Length: 477
Image (cartoon, rainbow, N blue to C red; front, side):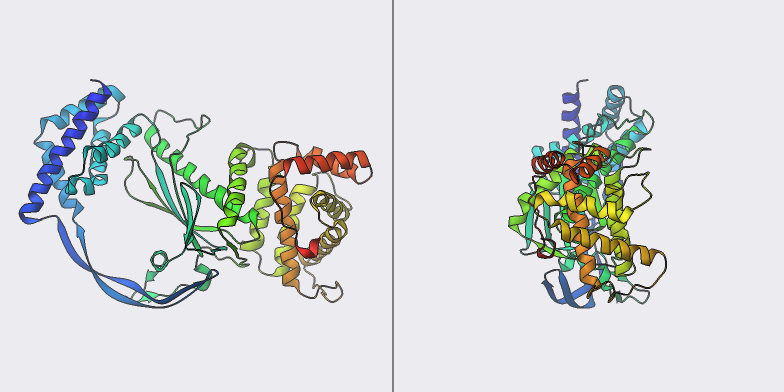
């Protein structure tokens, strides 16, 4: 039997079940139940540049839901009394060489995914759209995936922004905060710690491209397909959060992800991640004017994913540097500790493996030349990196830092300057990845210190490859 013929049979089969289901509902509505539940009650909710304030209590609400298990039993009974069901499974088994038991589970999941359509008696078009997911699974083709991610570090100047047709960033609402509340033992609602309050929600929908390098073995091939779809969805969120961290200085970290796939391999929503403590929160706002620039960075990351996210035995300087800069937000117990992580991030890009002496001088000189073509003051950058390196050395050796002696009035502000220097350096390096190796880049920088022709070549390299407009903080100009 041809695939199109089987699809028609599946469509007609579910239309028949829909008619029987609606007939039963119209008689006595045996599939709904009412229940009471305790829910958080948010009052005077305010969102001000990412700062969220509210008064919260709890309330009992009455809800009504379908008893899906009763519908499931009704579906099993319908299958048992219908010869077409066994014929459809046999034809699918013959066509796709898939175990009958597994096909039966796929049909159960398809029934659950069609509940609304079956009860409301939707058009053939709606049913066909979801039935196609069954055949996508059987043919190992990805279907649409959806994700909702709770993110910290950015605030929106308006209710929501569309990054692309399939990516939306919006302000957090009480409904989204409700997701992270927990009921305590006595039935009350437990308040969140402030460090757990995410500031925005990212929503993504896509049909992932399963790249050729992902090999799906014969055994567990369907679950490998599901894992591949989830992995591509998470990678898309990684691109967005990385772009947000590179675009401006902010603690743009995703906490939890709620994933849902238009796939019948496994039913329901998958939740991953955890609300992590961000010890050094830095937030910035985004508006409509920022969207083209953010999209540009996301596109660069997506184009260079094979280089950026390449996990091999050979160290990846960009990945190492990003992780160490992340640690400056997540794991640093003080400003001094944060500076230590930032310097370590810069070292991953600007120092070679065999270099053991004059590291402070090499690092500060290379970074000052590296940023010079884009309008940064090399003397200010040199001074900043040298000071930061000294703080890093004193702190990592367990000694106390005399900020008056180091002529640093505000260590918090100094930390931000050093972090900005690292962020901008990584944003530039992202655009150079794939065009020049780290070794050749550092050799060219070193030659540029002494040779005008080499500096001209370096200046051209930076200006031709760095297409993202970079804001220069006044103190680094």
